[in-house]
Length: 196
Image (tube, rainbow, N blue to C red; front, top):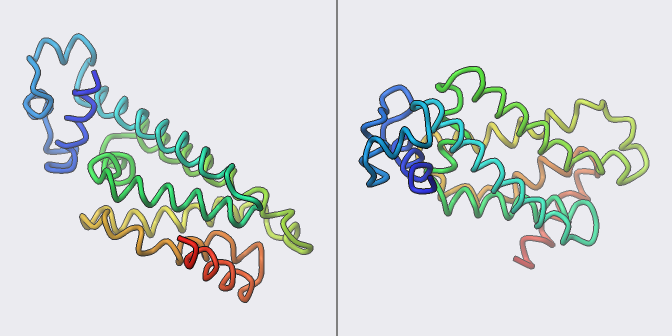
């Protein structure tokens, strides 16, 4: 099963969802066709399971990193560090999770929307980080998560997943500046970047 999921990710990166076939996945996984059908009904089923597997890994890694920070901005920074490292280290999985979801139908798109809402939850603490932050619209966290996703999406879609960590300071600024001040956000990002 793990080989099929990895093979699915490789094929999606190489060919895209629309051009991929079960035959391609079977070849990439190095298994017999009947083994594929013991685990999955079709290409979409394999894709959705791969997507879900990646989502679980992302949430576990990012959640673990988040709770290592001493305060909310640092927690968000550590989460983004973990996310950027994961994307750069596993470009095929990033491509499946971030890019190909829009080609795989409404269920895959809903999965991406749910992931965005989950990421937005990590920003909720920002509303109480400093006085005045609570006055931000409650949709701000979802908008911020969407902006981060869009920047990462563009890089991964261009085949530049390995470049994502270079954008970490910008991603960190996008995430924390609305809840702090511009000057505070810049100072914090400088501090975190120097520590890294």
